Structures are given as structure tokens and as C-alpha cells.
Image (cartoon, rainbow, N blue to C red; front, side, top):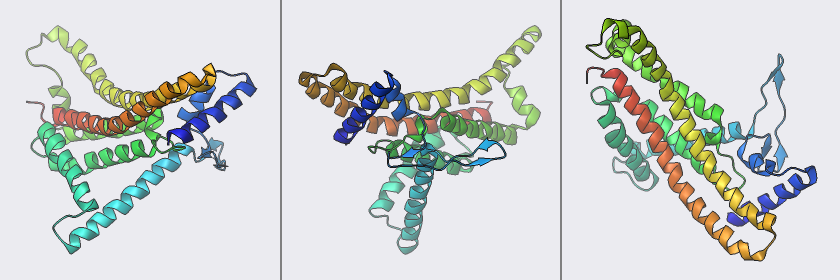
Length: 276
């Protein structure tokens, strides 16, 4: 895997050198593109002056969706045959129980069942996209700010909808205000609390985007040192550190899926149970 990445870095550096560029080769591997595994280019689609071209990240999101559909279809069929999980079914059940008992139930509390399907979907989708990004030549859709912002926006809608359904429209926004405030502070605190509603999804989007981009940038920079310094002495160090970061990325992929789900669940719990 690392050797494939080294070859990609070498090819990118050659292209960048021909164009007289310096750091664009790193961005080439991080940003979205219209190429799949560098083998073929996706066709451009324009409708009513709007660019609807399918990009690399979109393809990998579709791939994540297909993989999850196949896996959970298999898991569903296995439960119809036997209530005792085995193999892949057992693995998926471990993840599901973990999300339910260690994330959703403690942070939301009573009524968590209504939000569990969404939070499970978010967890497995982010986790799958993160792992697909570790495949050499693959693309990490969660390193795209548009993707993470969309996920955060959906969480924002679920948070507000949950709070309004539980407390009522006026009751929910009234509950945002701390009790016992002087009257003259109410307008200021209302603005602060409303801004706080939007900073939560913003933090979700930026956290996931930044963490999934950072690891890839570090790996590419380490491997790029081999060709930039043009010395054999740096090869063992660069490959060793790159391999370490690559293995660390596997842990980061799990952690970021957990953090996004946990924070979304926590914000939902705060919106639903304002009196706690």
C-alpha cells in the first residue's frame, strides 16, 4: 500500500515539476477530482448551466452506500435464519450495541430509540468512507468540507426537530435561555444562544474534515521528502514514519466516526432534555 502511494507521489511530483509548481501535488491527492484511481476520467454533466458532474468523492460515497447496503442485507437475512449471530453478523452487532449502549443511550436518555436509526446510519457511513480513503488510489469523501458540512447540516436539523417535538416550538427556544437572568440581558443572551445553535454543527463539520485531511497530508509530505531531498538516506525514515501514520489513520478513522456520532447524540440530548 505504501509502495503504491510512493509511486503516486513520484508521478505527481514529476507533473508538478513540469508545470513549475511546488505543493499542488499534495492538494491533487486531497481535493476532489474527476478521475477514478487515475485510470479514467468521469464524464462532465451540465444541466441548465449547473455543473452536475459526478466526482471522485461522489463515487466513493456511492460505493460506501452500496457496501453498507450489501452488508446489512446479509446481516438481516442471517437473523431470519438464526438469532445467534456469527461472523460478519456478530461483528456488526458489536458495533450496533456499542453505538446504542455507549453513545446514544447515555447521551440522550429517555426516548433515544427515535434517534438511534439516524445515528447508526451516520456512524457506519462515516466509518466506511474513512476506511475507503485508506485504499491506495482511493478517495476520502469525509475529507471534503462539502460532505462534512452536509452531514453536520442534517445533524443540525435532527437536533432542532428533536428539541421542538419534545418541548414545542416556543418552549424549545424559551428553554435555551438560562433561568434567573436580568431582563436587560435577555436580548443579548438570546443572540448568543442562537449563534451557539449554529456553532455546534460548524464544529462537527470542521473537526471531521480537518482530521481526515491532516493524516493524508502528513503521509504525502513524508513520502515527498524522498524525491524532494533526492537522497537514499531519508527513504527508511520517510517510509517508516509514513507507515506509522498510515496505521494511525486506521485508528483515526474509527475515532472520528465515534466523535461525530457522539457529539451529534450529545447535542440531541441537550435539545430534547433542556430541563436537565
